[in-house]
Image (cartoon, rainbow, N blue to C red; front, side):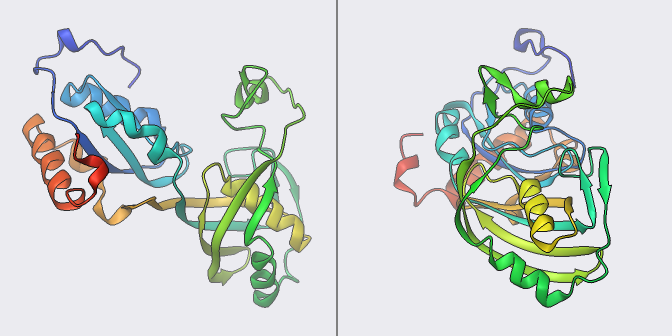
Length: 255
């Protein structure tokens, strides 16, 4: 995945079509890995993604191709929906399972009703402190680069909004919940804050994006399917999605 892309040396002609493809990002792939895969496999000179997913997360990644890359900023700024799992009683330095465990606490006293009540406290607008392991920039440097060097700095809290949040399963030390939130919401930070609210600590155990703006995971293509496609399959998919899903949206008529 780390090869430098050179469209002139590709065995396929550059793909000139424009459009959107939704991909179900697999675990352990970065968002850029998916972009690079599309670029290199199908010789797509211009492709980008709309909203980063952490490598450990899975689910909906919106990719824009050709002239549709102009809409990347707009799509990235739309609300997102997730299915999430929290691990109660465990705290890590990254707020998810990729980091080092820094505390393990008793969670046995936490009841389902307590969990539901705690979730409700996070509904609405609020300030959230970005984690050190994040792509937020401070003085021109990304926080995750500083975190890798063991440097922790003061961060400015950001206003976010959680439009809906609901528990779907309670099975300590795990609990599943769904949420719809604004751009820039860190679900792992939410899990950490939720754990603190409950008094036992918590870390994000699993995360899957299900919606991004008007785009839905049910329309996404898996990477395994993409590995079987030829360039014409992607071309037909872009045209089909454009006509079936986007044809009634006026802002796309110029594309």
